[in-house]
Image (cartoon, rainbow, N blue to C red; front, side):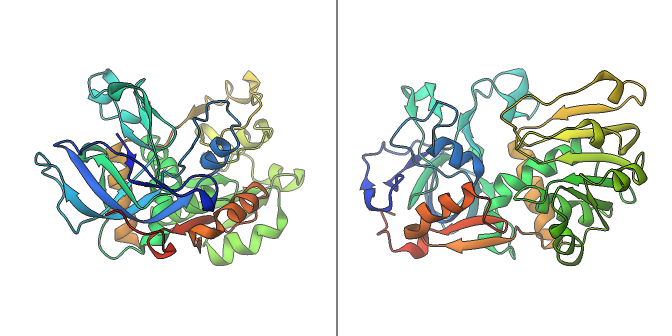
Length: 352
């Protein structure tokens, strides 16, 4: 179970020291160094999904250093640099867990605002805190050489795009990948695609993002999805598409971009149903799949790949006293591309 020892709630002035349980034998105590701010945090803070359990302690893109381990811990020791992602528990006995897909376990325990039924139904507390305690089974080793602030968003945004690319064969050199949206997830998908040796085309409604996509992130091409002529010219050219957009948008024009047997993976979560006419997929044998973050194994493999290729998110590092302003800016999509809180440098007063 994720337990924050020093909790930092929604307002910067509301920091409170929480009573915690004695760590269990398999627990790892982690001093939080950096924590990314995800759109999911925004939804929880604003109770958009009606499931917020206040006082909420957000944060599930956590990088820190181990300060202590339980007697049964074998994978980590004090001083190790580690990460914690979107979830911190699962039943470990169902088919999904048995196949290494803990992220799809019906009993998955989210890092923040999750319900840990095995421990009295208490709410989990996330990474907007000095210290977090997590079972070693859900702790990740951060490879040497990665910039820790840029690594934090990989624990959610990174694995969310990496995992389906691996699962659906969208990682083969020479294949053509379309990336819809150039935000927190999309820009990392571009980086992974290029590291795999793929041709990558960014698809966006915003022509102003062309220079960023091509010159800074290294995309091979850029399509304006509202330009019918551009879309028509690119029809049938892509092996697969990663759709990262969380706002409602038409997907039929995107499906037309793929070759027969092409695969689209939806990782954004629009608040209205997407429209999928059968004629858009049946004649070409095309597929549409969803993906929710990734398993522990997926996330560790993603970190190793990122370490090998020097991949990190583009971030704006902030202190904790700027969090409320950052949340307001995030709501307006005013960030390039991820806010990351310098928790250790925010002078919160450590409980470690």
